Image 1 (cartoon, rainbow, N blue to C red):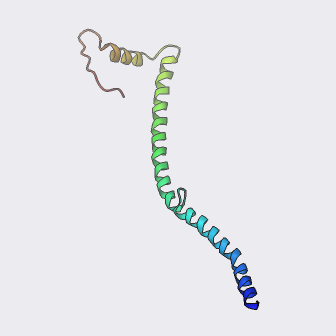
Image 2 (image 1 turned 180 degrees about the vertical axis):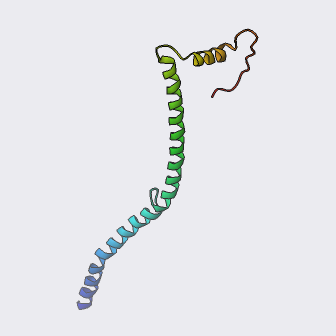
Image 3 (image 1 turned 60 degrees about the vertical axis):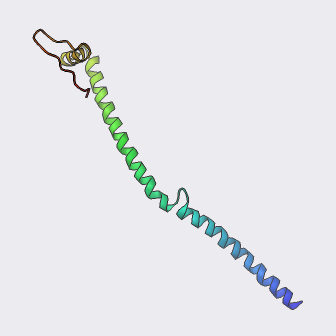
Length: 105
C-alpha cells in the first residue's frame, strides 16, 4: 500500500514536467527547423533581396515611361520625341535619310 502510494505520487509529480517538456520540445523544434524557423530565415531573406531588386527595376521602368508620357502631354508634344516615335512606327524619315531599325529602349 505504501509502495503503491509512493509510486503513484512519484509518477503524478512527473506528469506536469513531462508534458511541459514535450510541448516546449515540439515548439522549439518547429522554431528551428520548421517552415518559418530560423533555418528558413536565410532563404526567405535571399528571396526578399531578389524581389526588392525586381521591384527597383520595375520602378525605374515606370519612371522612364512616366517621363516619356509627360513629354507627350505637355502643351505641345516634344518635337524630338514625336520624331522618334514617328520614325520608329513608320520607318520613314526626311528625303535622303535612311532609317535603321533598332531595339526599343
